[in-house]
Length: 203
Image (cartoon, rainbow, N blue to C red; front, side, top):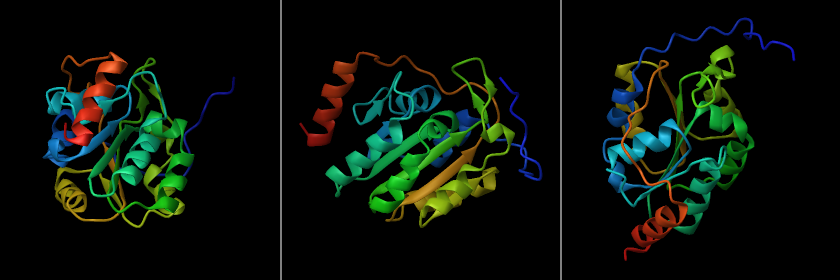
């Protein structure tokens, strides 16, 4: 198999943010959302931030499903705030989801991608974004009305403002390689499903 090569002429600033600080700084009130969290780091982080709360559906072993699950939630629950949070590897697995989300454009949905440029669950290989692919430009090309990239701590405040504003948006949070926030969480699908449904219905 041919070796993947860095895209020539693409110069992104090096990622300097630690995801363990940057994700909570961006998503200050995770309990205010219905959350579909992609597998691996993002699911671990949102479950840790909510004490494995029932409003977070943290996926496991369903790579690429997070963004479309978030879209379905947003369409089915138009009066609720929905957050789809995913990683660069997962989003690359199902990049076409961004096109569908942009076309449907639910005003109550935000997509956050935590991009560390690596496939952290499978040996920490460079992902496409680690070699120059720019997910923020892809989101803009698909038609997201608001796209914001966070490379520095100073840019997090604008990300928080976007999360607090109505309308579909895509936020790319670029972080350096390193571990996610971790706390024990349930990996029993029926338990996660049932408690999330109860939180969604207010029961």
